[in-house]
Image 1 (cartoon, rainbow, N blue to C red):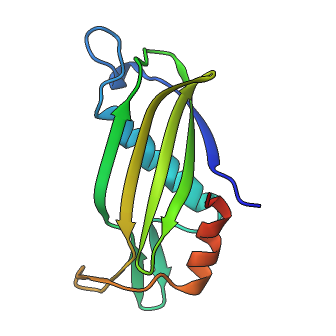
Image 2: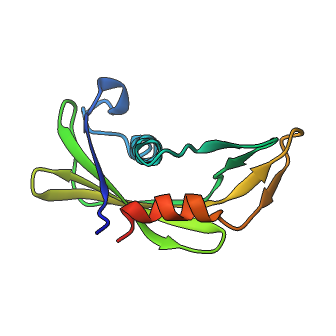
Length: 139
């Protein structure tokens, strides 16, 4: 049975505005950090060596809906789930909670790409071994 990846963060002062409320842009950094942790937890990376080239995951979409304020030193729980696994792309859903309260929900869509030695990107089908690992956090 697969389930979302879970992580926890304390809100740092640098991520807040003058009122001590988490700045909207910081949610995107936290989403990316949680995604990277989730990938590492299944033996993957956002920059995965693949023989002579690298497989990368450039983002093509990122959204976040805010439901409540998050303040300096709050502890937030972040879950990351694979909500869609296409032939070349993956959509992650991030849910931010303080205790039982959902404070934000975000999504990131990333495309599987081969990166050559000239740093050129070409979208590719998600390789079967990577697909299998991503399904460990599919819902």
